Length: 321
Image (cartoon, rainbow, N blue to C red; front, side, top):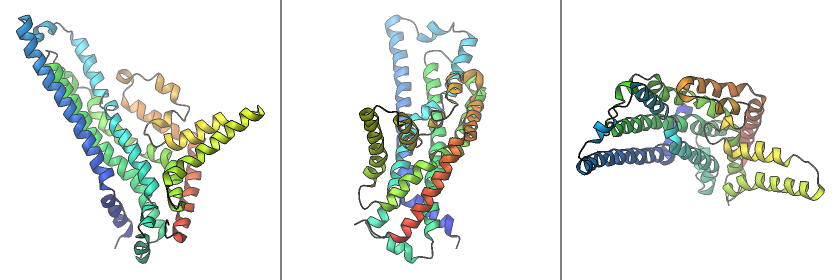
């Protein structure tokens, strides 16, 4: 039996609600909202015709081809930002998945069953890590790409009800086809940036006897508050601001895809980024460029040490009571 794929399947079935159904439900609500907007557009068109004696289509027919092209290009790029609700869902799913990854089976004592199986603690922990950093983001990205395309197509249909037909320009825009691939292509960047954060939560999950969320949040926040208090008391610069930004901020901000720009030197480049003229592949390139910074590799080294510590703790901790 190939153990690791089996462990990955186990993780998926145990966390199917967060990994699959949560993004499906949110994506469905987004699609429903876009459909409602389309229906409102159809209703508004009919009502306007009856009130004003002329169709809205006739009123906007003079829109230039150049303007339609700009609208189409902006809508094609909007596939990526339209995924923001799903990105938020992914961040929360991975956060709470990590916090419960090694705690829940100690809490219900099912860890004793899994330890009786011919599966090592290393394989178990690494399968959970891979599920959080690779499988969950891939599922969310795939669902997000589909939902983003549907939302943009429904928005284009809504515009068409007012006489602005951008479908030809939209379907000939490169970003319309590139967007899903661009989203999927940055998953390795997310995995590398989020590794230290996920590893920290897994370590706390393996160690805490209760309330792993409070321990995972409380320890860095308490350290930051203590450091700030020491600075205020003794009027010395002890690096509290750096600690809040690079330890606390990075620790929890890295769960959000795209936040790597905020913790790297690429933020200025992103602020100068022009979606229509620069294209999505340039944004992907800037994401991968952040991996050249030392902070990423320092974080990876720390994350690897935390994962090793979580494996060791799981070997000896068998209950959460």
